[in-house]
Amino acid sequence: MGYSIAWIAVRGKTKDEILARLALADTGQPDDANESPVSGAALPGGGYLVFFNDMAHPATQAPSMALLSAGCEALGCQVEEHVMASAAFLYKDGVKAWDVVHLAEQGLYHLAVDGTPPALLDTIHREMKATQDEQGGAEADVDCLFEVPLMLATALFGYRHDEAALLSGETLRFTELVPAEPAAGRRH
Image 1 (cartoon, rainbow, N blue to C red):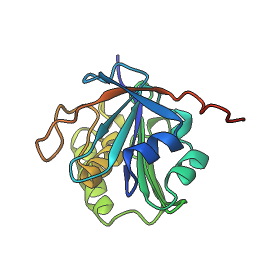
Image 2: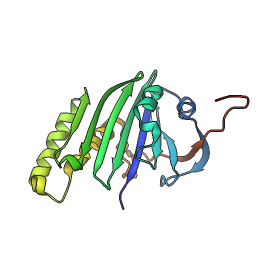
Image 3: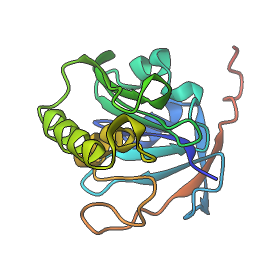
Image 4: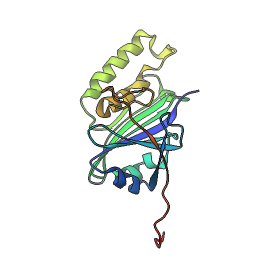
């Protein structure tokens, strides 16, 4: 069994603003193992991370990311280990700045890049390509380039979905998030 998840880390908005934009409410119930459909945690130094047990959650799609990132920046990461697909993407002030996608079905060396990602991407890509070469190239039983978007996202926000602690060594305290109740008198 593998991961099929997504997460969004936001800097520049409060937790309440982020949850309101995503129409979510915090139950306050601990979800340290991210077993709830959606959970969230405050990031050290500011920011908030929303974790989805759904790789293609609507919040991670372009229209939602554009709305969420208005006046701030939002980094999204998607992981689908069943087909070895991964992505990292950054939206800032309502506009996609870049995305990096690996789809194993298009080859173990596949990496699609759009926009202008951080220069660190080149270093990570070279390292993982060399590792793939060492493991047997396109015929290998491992997919090293799957790691490229994940490593980039981790380098930028310190979080990795399959690690107990942040790069800083701190542990996030996730709580369950649920759909928010519509405000009284509010019409849709």
